[in-house]
Image 1 (spheres, helix red, strand yellow):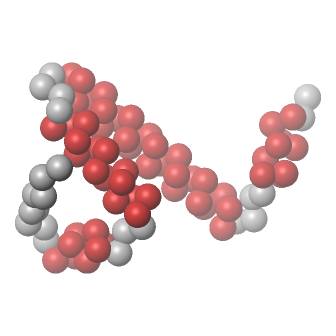
Image 2 (image 1 turned 90 degrees about the vertical axis):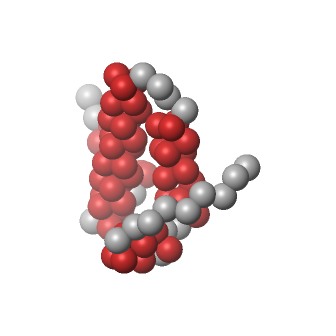
Length: 80
């Protein structure tokens, strides 16, 4: 593995430093996938996939903060 340094605006650098290990890993996977993909169409697919995953994570976190539990979700999904 090789260490690489990115220059970022100060606000982005502060946000990066405060990321959870899970979010840092997400960013690592995104950058690695994007850099290892030579095809621009495939890069757009990767970017779309990661945007969707980020949206799903945000929606899940918002749902939990609004009181959603696994039991409530299962009841909703199992309604006929």
